[in-house]
Image 1 (cartoon, helix red, strand yellow):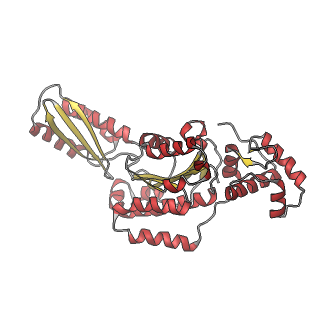
Image 2 (cartoon, rainbow, N blue to C red):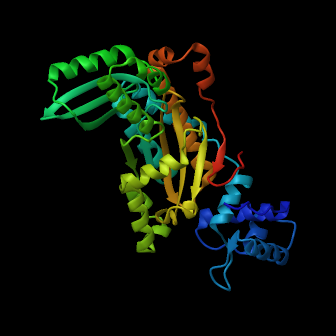
Amino acid sequence: MTELPELTARQGLLLKLIVREHVESTVPVASRTLVDKYRLDFSPATVRNEMAVLEELGYLAQPHTSAGRVPTEAGFRYFVARLMEEQALPLAEQRRIAHQFHQARDHIEAWLPLAASVLARSSGAASVVTAPRTTEPVYKHLELVLTHGRAVLLILVLQGGTVEQQMLALSEPLTQTALREVADRLNQIFTGLRVAAIEARLGELPSFEADIARLVVSIMHNAEGTPSDEIYQHGLSDLLQEPEFTEGDAASTSVVRVLEERSLLQAVLAETLTPAVGVGSVRVLIGGEGRWDELRACSIVLARYGVMNYATGALGVVGPIRMPYGRTISVVRFVANILGELVYDTYQPGIRGAFTDNEVLTNERTDAGPTSVVGQTETQ
């Protein structure tokens, strides 16, 4: 994506105020509104001139000749990247959310539905939360199950609970007992190892066991950084009440497709939350960034939670481009931090076993991380 043209201090102030007004009112913003409401020390004529420049730069649009201006996608991107002030959640709201998770602390199955509910309610948008899974897979257990003839079901369990399955066809028939013995030997050798360590030991194995191990390596490579297919959602019906989605069938159909088509949602999550995106970082995707037509009417605010290099998941909200980004980012970051603490506390023995103490310390979360607009290099 091309670099955003730089604005003067006054242009930046006006763009910031126009975004704020449009998010609150949903209507075009007039120059007189800005001068009167914010007691600007320059005239409406000066404001109109600056708005015309912002329109030429692609940051504003004028829906009708006599109307005020509205921010464009580029305008919202510039706002998030350069002008936005992240709004800390009120202390009372932080305590209420933290208390809800404290009550569910001993009920792992309740964490993700609760996170989805809290995100949707606190942001006023639709939420998406994926289950945590290992970012760099660690071998835990293998089973080989004879199904019929020479067909075998390979079941690979990774640390963190991820289960991968694949069918394979044997070149020569084997009994279930023989398959169990192969799986037991591989479990003795590979349990607790990562891909590189398994690959280093392939030359020690007999031919058939080496073939199985290579298949295991391939499965583990494919699992690296892939979002979980266990996805929790909340708030779609409320989102569809927003003006952007009640006025046009195309926009509402697109946002429903984004949230209901798991393959599309996983593709967006995988591309925007790559392994390079650390825990605590928040990414903002505005209008599909020219890559996803289904997202043209949407913005998505995403974060990674968990413990890097062990188990992480993704969470975020989907809303209209006219979104209160400062508050939304704070909500997403706050819930991500809480879920990250729960993952760390629950899996701490496994984490300690997978890494040295120094590695654990370097992967612990911070209370705040960078915010980035997808396609931009600026953070704040």
